Image (cartoon, one colour):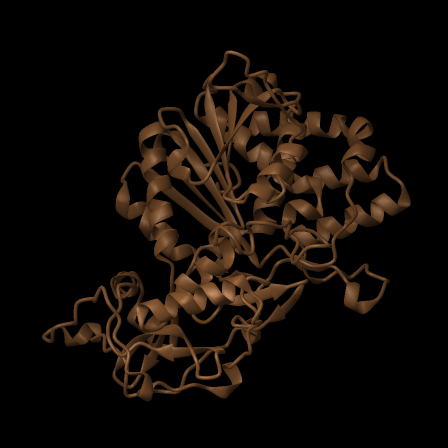
Length: 490
């Protein structure tokens, strides 16, 4: 294994840093993860006579309607299930904006459009003007639980760099970096490996100005004096690496080997929801009821997203589709994966995707989380995080479809992934030099990352028991075939 030696060496040096970094890096354990619950998002609509009809694969002699660029709705025939009617806040700028879009269109919008506006509307989107992470936010992610998560991602990235032949210049890209905690822990853990850190240019793909400022702070960035310098640089003093911010992956410069980290990024990409009805599959839409609340309705004819539904169904077995009455498809995930695969194919490198999801078709998984509690999707839009299970099988097909020069590995569980990288050795070393309070925090964080269910060692209040997410979260890698199989997936 070409990466076994550098992995052991990096772990050895990580362990050696325990005494000097222990107090500086420890964070209190968090009490909940961003996770999924089918009960929070059920939005089934009774069968309606106004539904689109997609022919089954065994009826190829009939013509499937082509997707239309416009959606025509006969509102009188739409069903409004009362359990999904919610009174939006009349003061909400986003509610007014959504109402305006629906009124201007003369009909409902897709769940994906609603999700995109709720999360990334430039003025009132959930992610745009606030810090939503951590115990004081709305949900907690793995990097916020323990420094070990970012350190292990750093081990993986350095191993991939080794497999790439230790290039002198590499783009290290993080998609949706949150507070910047993962990247900060990665850089701290890698500081002993000068050749690796000196090769890096960090690229943070982030659309939120608020989170960009937090990332700048947590990476301990300094802006170079721009006197007479048009292209001023920002340097992270954690490892003396240049850092740049971009609104989209397409803005990251090409031409260099690239390592892409996408941790809990795909789950926030907008999904289209389809529901089985007597005449076939129809897209679920969001409309405004007479009392001004939002409600789910069904499209009476094919929508533009129908082409992605048909594509996803072609990748699935007939038995898989027959078992479900709802399907979620994510065109943006397909397109992003193809962009990643094309870049890796051309420039070399790889991508690591970690998220909760399934290795197959995803049914009705869309959920809303506010202050660590599940709420209804349509309740006060913009005040809760929306996310959906990631369809890892769709990611695999999308990557393999666009390039023969990349290979896809996984998904494997987060527990398997972190275990292969040596997190067990890391936690044992950290426990050798810490206070009892820090040890409790360490054990709790470790369990959240790799455990399953409630922690067996927990003695505190039941409602605060650490829940292990080691099997719920999945890891997948897309790499250039020339580099072989990435570490942890062998």
